Each structure stands twice: as structure tokens, then as C-alpha cells.
Image 1: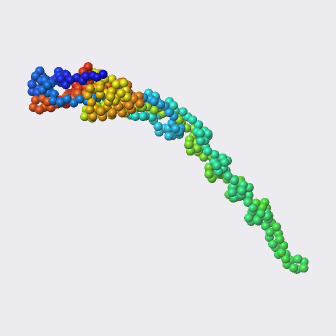
Image 2: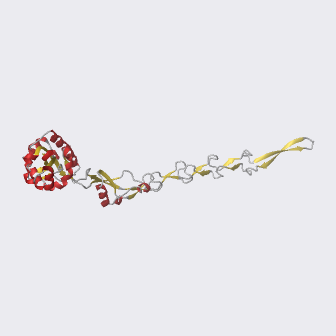
Image 3: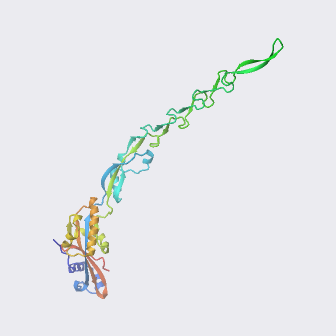
Length: 343
């Protein structure tokens, strides 16, 4: 099956019908009725445009939880969205978009501390105090003054009845330990223990995961696939004719083309017989179009069959070498003339 492009005469005459008298005078210096396609059209370039309607709004493709719950403080730095506002936000972006959902926020127990907010001090094992190293926990030390005897020995000189002088010992309770042989440990004050230096007597440390709160927040993120291009149509044309892309939304409802079911059919053996003309430039355009439409189809963004539209480029000349271009998009069953090159 093949389809026919409009003839260059058809294209020129349609342009001529709509052309304003002032433009014709400027180009030809004669009335419209005297202008002919045969004398004006000097050359015709044939090409093709591939077009398909594409999704312009972001599509929600998944919803996944964040990898690790966050503290309240960190969560407060995140901008969350309600479902409706998430869609609006994703529509403004391109490609894959992750959107935090406010309605999925929930509080969960911190796994590291079991919800207590604290981690038991390993030094004091949670007691908040340590055994005094000076007294080994007894609270007392051997009295240094009496060497732990509880008494001091004093010597006095005594003369006996024979008149001999000798020394006698007098025993006195140690005034340092009051005769108790031991003194209070100056380090712990007799308690046998002191505040844990590691945890400052608390018996625990703040959990570094939840910062002592005992709970964290988790939520889900909606994953949207947003079109990379926001235009209503995906358009593939030769580079020299890319300026015509902006006219596609206007001309599509007015033109006729050949429908291609999918990108898999964008091959030379299928397109060349239908198109009726083929060259290296068209071949490159076909391959590029196939690659791009294949990607769009994988992302489920193509909303309509691919349309193949013939493109005619008429290089025209009026009086006094006034050159201008006329373009036609579509088949003879429906085509649109664009006078983009008319001065």
C-alpha cells in the first residue's frame, strides 16, 4: 500500500488561493490570476515527518518507602505533598520524579535503642556510678598515720627505784583514724563509688540514631515518570525542517497521513513502499525516529499511532529573482500549506 503526496501544482495553487493581493504584488508585480505554478516552482524537495501524540502529564509508576527512617528534625527539612499537589509538582518536571507523600508519614520505634532513646553506658553498665579505684569500693583506706594499727606509740623516760633510767611506751588512739585503723577514702568520700565519668551519672547515652527521641519518621515517595518533552506531540523531522515542529499542533487535526502501529514498523522495508520515495536523509531520519519512539513506548508515553506525513518543500521564484519557499504537510487526502519562506 502506498499513498500519494499532493502535487507541487496542488500545493502552489492552494497557497495562491489564500495569498493576499499585497504579497502577490510584492513578489510578482502582477495580479494573482496571472501567476502560475509552472513558472514559479523551480525545485521540489521531498521529505517526511513522523508524529505521535504523547503523554504530557506525569504518570505515577510506583510508590516506595524511604530506605531509612529519619529524625523529626531532618524530616522537617523535606517538602511533602498531598496526592493532588504531587501530581501538579511532577507535571512541572521531566524524566523520573520522586515526590515525598505527606499522607504516608508515620512514627516508628527506633530499632537501635528499642524506642527508649538511650543506649546503656558500657562503662558503668547503666548504674550511673563506678567502683572507686582508690579504695576498691570499700570506702576506707589504711590509716597512714598509724599504719593501720589504730594507735600511736610514745616513749617517755622513767627512773626506777635503783635510779636507773629507762624508756617506757605509752599507747594512744590514733587521732587521724580515731583508733579505727582506717580513714575515709578521699576520692569517693567513703561511699566506695563515684559518678561515672563516661555517662556523667546518667547510666546511658543518647541514641545517635533517633537523637534520644526513641522514635523516627518514615514515609513513602511516589515515583512519577514525566515526559522529557512537554509538547503534545513527539515530532521527528529532518534538521533543516525542524522549525516546522511548532506548527504541528495546529496542522495535525487538518492533515491526513499514514498510521504506523508501533515503532517496530519503522523500518526501510515497510516504509519505503508506502512513502514512494527514499534517500539517505530519509533513512537516517527513520532510524532516529525509531529509536526515539521505542523509548517513548517503553515508558508508555505514546497515546496514538505514529503518523507518517509527507513533506514537500517548494522552492519558488517570483519576478526580479524574488525567491521564496512554500511547505506542504500531509497527503493529497488532506494537506496543509505553510508559507514560512514567503517574504
